[in-house]
Image 1 (tube, rainbow, N blue to C red):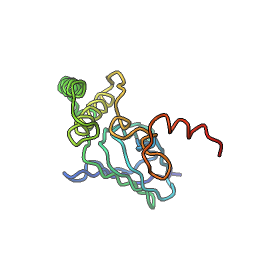
Image 2 (cartoon, one colour):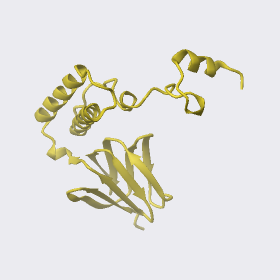
Image 3 (cartoon, rainbow, N blue to C red):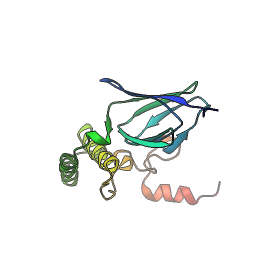
Length: 176
């Protein structure tokens, strides 16, 4: 008896990058990793830059993807992303240089956090880190990511009114 499979397709603006029947999928969403098996319920998820792993006939394959979306429906997973890479396509020397340049630019960035320029630098850093992880030589973790491009959790108080950190802390300890 053959094991149940589902179809994975990864599509970028350049076209279909991968189209395979697979046994299992793990992908990076903006809320953390998630897994998919044949018969999974329909789902739409926002993807974060990272590694997609899939199992096909017992063999594990990994690819890097940029931010995007994945739709799971009728034993089919379609990933829409602007970036894709296989391990074989990674030039670790070039990627390390790209990562160093992005890190240095972010370390000396004096503009507004969350601006287009800042977000582009963070995206370059995350992509380089994902490529190095795919290659098998991940960089040390950084303290940047979504928290650096989004306002802190206490930025807006209840009812969308801005509060200072002291007011937000007092609200957290108030009786319900």
